[in-house]
Amino acid sequence: MTIIMILLIVALGAFTRTVFGFGEVLVTMPLLALVAIDLKVATALIGALGLIVAIPAVIRHRQQIDIAVVRRLVVGSLLGVPVGIALMTYVPTTIVLRTLAGFLILYGSYNRYQLHRHHVQQQHLQSHHWDYLAGILSGVMGSAYNSHGVPVVIYGTLKKWPVASLSSIL
Image (tube, rainbow, N blue to C red):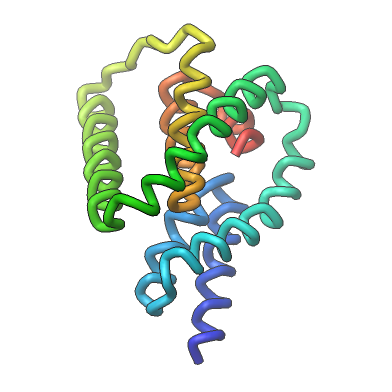
């Protein structure tokens, strides 16, 4: 029964990624935790399956991929991976997850407030140096909890990237 639940959860995550272009980790990781799967095992499983699910999206959106942006994100990510591994090794999981949850709640609340005010936020992130920071955060979150897409989605939203461009990068 547990294997069937894991397969259904993984299928739901793949469906989420296919429809929205990202988010399989945000759906799959909490559900796998409810089925009592170890976080490290779930991270490895989602990482392997996420790569398989990402390949068709990359092929479909290859014209929208900005190689220069991807290069900067990857360089930043490579710098962030050791930090994420150290984070996962030395910092209690509950602290990291609560911090991430708090940040996501604040970010979502801020966007909701802006939407409610009908205020269009001006684009403040003009420099390409922000790509590296987003990459570092993506590397940290990706290596620790396989949530590499969260920083990139937030960054892409702040940069006002078109949805097709954002989906192709993730």
